[in-house]
Length: 132
Image (cartoon, rainbow, N blue to C red; front, side):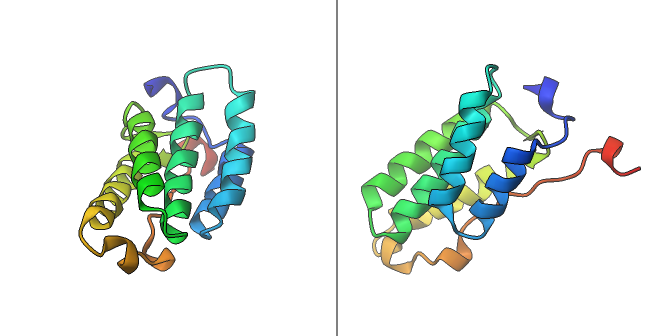
């Protein structure tokens, strides 16, 4: 989805990422769902992917391994098409970090070792047009 790669991040994405990075994945889900519903184009899958990764991390933090793995897989699948970045979201980095958490969770005892502090972070970069 290269058409959106250089666009600045919309306010709902910025707020969703802020909540995601604070480990407030349920609240991030609510904000990103609003963005997803308002977006008529294919970029809505970016929002869906990010919110599903967040819900997967939420499940992990609550001890639900099956839910965590399922949502991480679904979210990462949606994000794949937006590599390397879209709307300022560094998709490659998020996919790399989410995949590492997913692998760690899937190991014996992985869920017990999961820590919110070590969860992936979503990174937004500013577009060159914004740097003026």
